[in-house]
Image 1 (cartoon, rainbow, N blue to C red):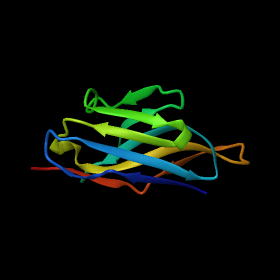
Image 2: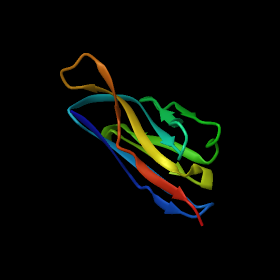
Image 3: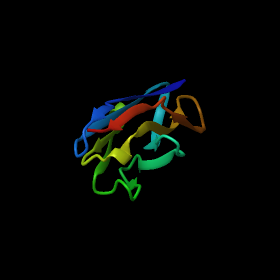
Image 4: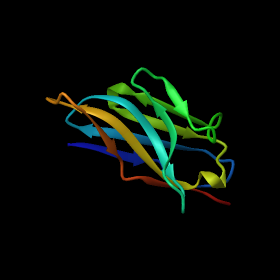
Length: 121
């Protein structure tokens, strides 16, 4: 099995910063593209940022210039540095990963349980 666990969420004032982490664990052979998604109240889940195993990144227009995604392949961990946070960034943030398990020829997609980020004064 593979588990994704997010950490680092919480309450922050507008203009503040938070750093989210997501660690993948289990019988992992390798991880491919990993990313962050979010679901705001009353809205559908949306992409925030993704990063390939080679380090190529993709961001939603709404977070470009404010958020930075990075990864540590040795630890199967990704990070999301969120700066200049706005109330509209309030959402549950989900980690996502494409993972090839040990002794498997297939890649499966996994989701973390999600972590709350609230931006309010």
